[in-house]
Length: 234
Image 1: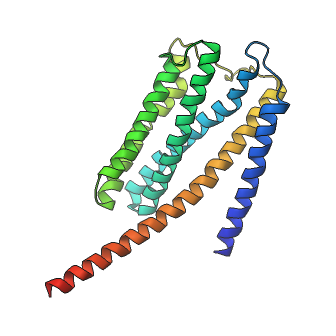
Image 2: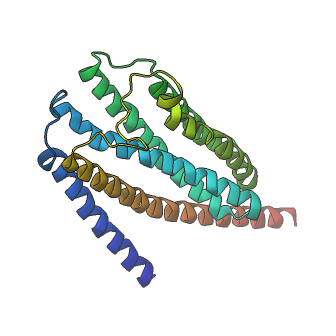
């Protein structure tokens, strides 16, 4: 417990420092973009939010595979925690994207391929969480959730490649051959990416711990109920 507490504290400190550094660089260090001005600073939050959404749903995918192979309920609980965080972050992706679109495109929403596929991804994992609450039985719920998490992840590479496969208004800042960012902007983006990754790790660690505790309490409740039923039958 002491070791886990120390790791939690250390991760929390690094997360706090990284988020603070990211906020400072996003609002004060990075220069204003010539065309868009201050609204471009949403970029330093929008891109990391999208990255964490993809990472969170990849964890759901990997945990789904691991559960089907091992039938260890811990993998299912980790997938649930990651999906919850992923839905929150993907919601923020859509919100920040809409704010940016209103300033740049003069509309809150357009059915651009990147926006549309991201909306579909959000709906898939929102449905994943809703289904979890509807299916009874831990094993059945974990099995069904694992399959949906694996199949749903197919949309992640579609979202990523959408601006390359279809004609889109969404800007492409980073490609294989070039980075369309000044060095201070790139440094700010990298710090924000690191900060959001640490934040995701911190949230996932604590959310999974809560999920494990809830599962243990549920098992205790089931055992007590079974014993009470057995006594009544006697």
